[in-house]
Length: 528
Image 1: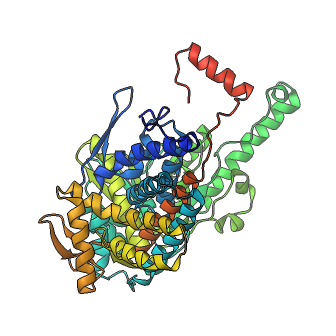
Image 2: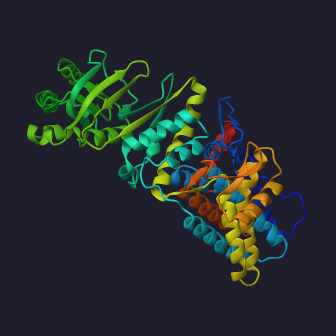
Image 3: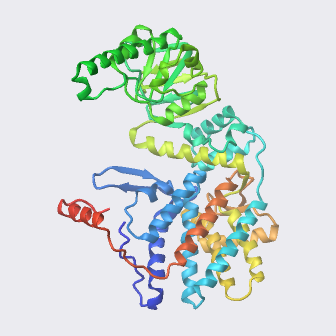
């Protein structure tokens, strides 16, 4: 999507040209994802110049893969990515609301409301909306709460098998672990073509053992993790050409073999290595019946270390005496290689409890999408455990919009028009969900507003199957508080940032970038 030339196509005050251009760019981005929201949302097909295809309705994936040049559009995409990094879900809601805020803000400015007053009202309205949602939060007290299954289903786009996997993993890991600041439930998910759905206590390393001559499985493990190469210390070519240098080379080779032999003496039977393994070490370890996995990525090394209770060691650490090396060893019940999936599993670690969710997929084309769905579901479950939940389906945004509208009278002057922007933006998620389901959004949104006011129930929304008023909480349509609050906050921040832009000036390119761009042009390469 080329947004370099986004414009309004109408004559406007020159002073508002930047605002109009930015608003149109944001509108184009919003249009790309709004059709995916809700239970009746559709998929988007992304195609690159090589013909590679991604089919998804995951908002952040669509935004991340789009070909975008306009700076305001990039701002919106970056805020969606930040939402994904923070809570792992809600990017489509954040994008739709941000687009709504910018659009409504521009309309107010075109009516003559000063931008500063619009921004003041938007900030006030966003603060009121956040307070409204926070006050309506319901708390999750333990991992057996049945609401977690509903949250997993909604975020997992009603894939029951994935929702069951996520909830089972959450229960295995426990309430305390899910509340840890640096732990992400979505990180334990992996998907493979031809695999069956599975949850187990242990970790997967997406590597095969170093040699087929090594055991395929072992029990009662002593695990050593080397955050380094398992190779002798190197010596320079110049030094090696001298007699003293060659002598030193032989000494280092002998010393290395002695250090590797310590692994066998300590009864270590599993070694994971960050980089490569020298031939002499491979030979010694094969003879000792040790399973070695080389070139393991840093994230997998860390997860295995936590699970087995090991401390990572450098190759120079093997020079220490055996008693000191013993302190670095971890323990687990079993390791085995899955020949079909070409991966190794380590089970029953004696360190921190660690579960793995393996999501199966029938074909290569759907592996990525099922993994994204599972990660969204896991992120929402963890967010609900941390911050509670609220009714979903756009109902809580309508309740917040009603509350914000009431607070409008607390603002004097033209800032109240900025509050109107927030009220209308909060209606956008339900409006789009209803439109995607094939109903009239204006009619249905007003029906929900009237029903909530009449019955005093903030969880009333629209049943997308029948187009009737329904209690979202009773139907199990619920969303995590943290996802909702982060989406509204992110939308407010990016909208204010875009509305504040008064002028767009092209920067002077530095010489290095200009030279690179010219070189790319000569070679027919794209200019990034």
